Amino acid sequence: MRYAMAIDTNKCVGCSDCVVACQTENNVPHGYCRDWIVESVSGTYPNLDLEFRSERCNHCDNAPCVRCCPTGASHIEQGGIVVVNHDECIGCGACIQSCPYDARYPHPDGFVDKCTFCIHRVEKGQNPACVDVCPTSCLHFGDLDDPKSDVSMAIKDRSWKVLAPEAGTKPQLYFLT
Amino acid sequence: MKEELFVSGRNIPNIDPYLNIWHWQIPLYLFLGGLAAGILFFAGYFVVRGKEKEMPATVKWATIIAPIALIIGLGALFWDLTHKLYFWQLYTTIRFTSPMSWGAWTLMAITPLSILWVASYMKEMFPRWDWKFDILNQFEAWIIKNRLPFAWIMMILSIILGVYTGILLSAFNARPLWNTSILGPLFLVSGFSTGLATIMWVSKDEHERKVLARIDLIFIAIELFLITHLFMGFLAGTAVATEAAQLFLGGDFTVSFWVYVVILGLILPATLEILEMFRFHIPKWLPPFLILFGGLMLRFVMVEAGQITRFLY
Ligand code: SF4
Ligand code: SF4
Image (cartoon, rainbow over all chains, first blue to last red; front, side):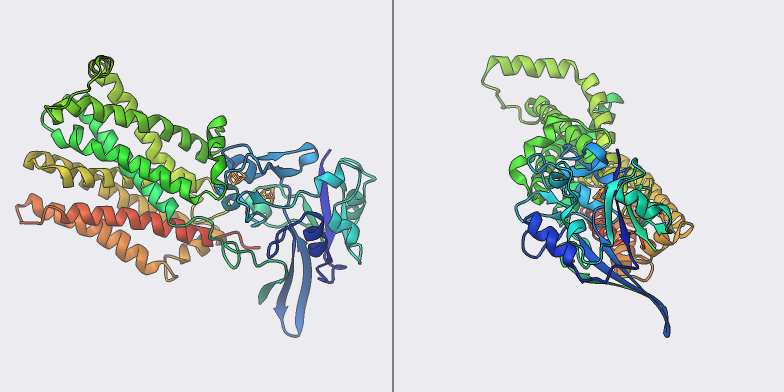
C-alpha cells in the first residue's frame, strides 16, 4: 500500500478551501497551517504562465525527516504516511531543517506538526479533509498500488511532476500539469 | 521571470520568509562541544605520549574547562528545544541515522568521563584536596591506575564529538550550504584549534605554549585548506550549491565570513604565532582570543546562513 495525492494544477483556482478545511479538521492553531497554496508565475509578458499548487507534506518515500529524528517521534505509518508522535517529540527542529519543502512547523505547544494525510479519516476509509472539500475536485487521494484508486486513475493519462526530485526524497505529491 | 507567491496560509513564524528554527544556542553548543573535544583530545594525547610532566596545563589545568563547557553546551541545546519536558525521550533510543541522536549519546558518555579525568588530577592540582570518603579514594586510585586506557577512550570520543558538531549540519540534504562532507572535518579541525587556543591561554609554561602553538599552526593551515575546498566544491556544484555559496561571495554573509572567520580568526592569529616564534613580543592572550572568536563566528555564520539556503523549485 502506498498512499499518495495528485493535484491538478490546471483545475486549481487557488481558493484556499483546502487550507481552511485542514485547519478546521485538525485544530491547527491560529496563524499556522499544514497545507498552503503557491501561485507560480513564469515567463515574460505577454507570454506568462500561471500555476496554482496546493502544497503540503509530500509523505516522502525516502523521508529525511524520519531519518534525522533523534527520538523516533517522526515515523512512517502504514501506507507510507509520515506522522509525528507528539508525545515523543522534543522539539529539536532537526526534522524542520531536513525537509526540503518546509512542510513542518513548530506548534505553539512545543512539538512539531505537519500534514498527516488526515490519517484518522483515512483509517476509516475516508478521504483527507482537503480532498473532500475542494470545489473544483482537483485533489485526488488514494493507494498507488491499486490501479483503480482515485490517485492512480488521475495520474494515468496525464503528465505530472514532483517538486525538487533532485533532493532524493521520493515525494508522493503528484502535480498534474 | 519566475515569481512564486504564497496565496494563503503560509506566514508561519520562524519558517517564512525563511527558516530560522535554530537560534544562537545551537552555534554556541557546537562551539563549546568542539572546544571541549579539543581540550580532551590533547589531554589524552599527551598522556599517551608520556609527556604528562612537560604539559601540565594541557593534561591537568585546562581540562577543568571541558566539563564546564560541555554542561553549558548541553544547557544551550536544551534551551533551544521547544518541547523541553520531553527531553528524556532523547535517551530512550539510539537512532544511528540521526546525528542528533548519536551526538547526544556521545555527550552523555564524554561529559562524565571528563569529570572523572579532572577528579583524578584533583590531588595533584590542589595538594590539600581530600575526598573525605574512603570509597572515593579507592575509585580515584583505580582511575589513576587505568589512566592510559582512559586517555585512549577519551581521544576516540573527542574525535567523534568533534566530527559530530559538523555532521549535525551536513546531514541535512535540504540545506545546500550544510550538505557537504567537508563540514565534518572542518568543524573537527576548528574545534581542536579552539581547544588548543584555550589551553595556550591557561598555560603558564613557555615551552608548553611553544609546542601547542606549533600544533595549532598546522591545524589552522588544514582549516584554510578545507575552507578552500569547501568553496571549490560549491562552485563546481549544481545551481543549488552555487546559489548557497553566493551568500559568502557577495551575499549577506560575505563580510562576517571573510573578515571575522578567515582574516581575524585564522590568518591573523597564525601570523602572530609565527611572529612569536621569531621572538617578537605578542601579548599572550591575543592569538588564543582571536582563534576562539573565529571559531565562534564560524559556527554562527554557518548555522545562520545554512538555514536560509534551500532547494530551488
Ligand atoms: S515533505 Fe518534508 S516533512 Fe513531509 S515526508 Fe517529505 S521530508 Fe518529511
Ligand atoms: S522536532 Fe520532534 S519530530 Fe522533529 S526531529 Fe526533533 S524530536 Fe523528531
